[in-house]
Image 1: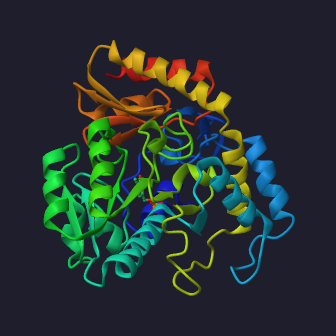
Image 2: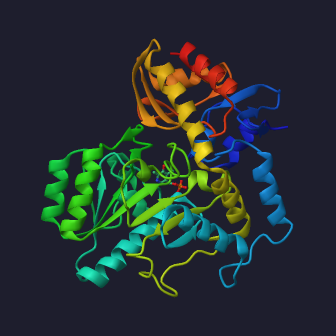
Length: 386
Ligand SMILES: *Cc1c(COP(=O)(O)O)cnc(C)c1O
């Protein structure tokens, strides 16, 4: 019989350089392999399993909907889709929600809205969107064009036209870009995730807001990774006092099922009309039911607890040996280590802790409800690998 690893290597496309870990099952912040080896999960499937693996409350929400109906298409009304949209609007003040299935699709929706809004309000020749250098916005041809990292582009040119990249946290460069181009929108991550867990400076965000008023363009925030409680607020823009026109999100929203969303402010809620955009699975009842259970649990009390755990993690790593810098917010943590990050992650896996990398950093995105004792154990193990 072929081993799982060999079968995967034989038949699954070669796009993933997997770690030598075969996961059979999981519960909470733990994953188990076929030999019963336990791993503490400090990556939550790249920020997806907000409440860990096979969480009971999340599972019952999914199973309850599974027993009703799994999919209907967007030709008909279903309760979970409408209720999730209502809940997101009520908690954020946004007016409408468009549902897709992934982060890239949520960003595609944002980009289409920016283009149509600009054409409607500023003229057909206004379509350019500014994004930040070192950003990450997805893998489709258009979201790759938005992504400000050349090495993702090289193999796939020509990409979608109309994106301009400017350095993050460089106010002068941003002013210049905005003044020299007739732009439709600026798309930012409040904390660059894949780019190395790098937060934007408050004054850069403030200047972006000023410029958007002066030059009449949309502010769009990619909260695919930072959203849904990850930074200790429901959405990361709330840490910056920012009022975006569009927010895209995915990853943690479904707690492990594929759902993405674009949140639309009053300014853009009616930009897209019948037939202008769509998604066969978008707002699927199972994924929406999962997301309702996730969003309902992100109460102020719960988020206060995320912040307490965050303080613990930041304090521990700031004073640890072998650490150069610690960055991020909430339970989105980037640690620059003296040793190469890949070596730290490899050693941690051997000792039963799964963590991520982002550029040259060790990146931690544990389940938001990770118990304190498991968190302490994982932090100690990671420190011992540095
Ligand atoms: C992961 C990620 C995406 C892409 O999400 P997919 O669901 O993989 O399409 C986009 N933007 C950011 C900030 C991300 O972290």
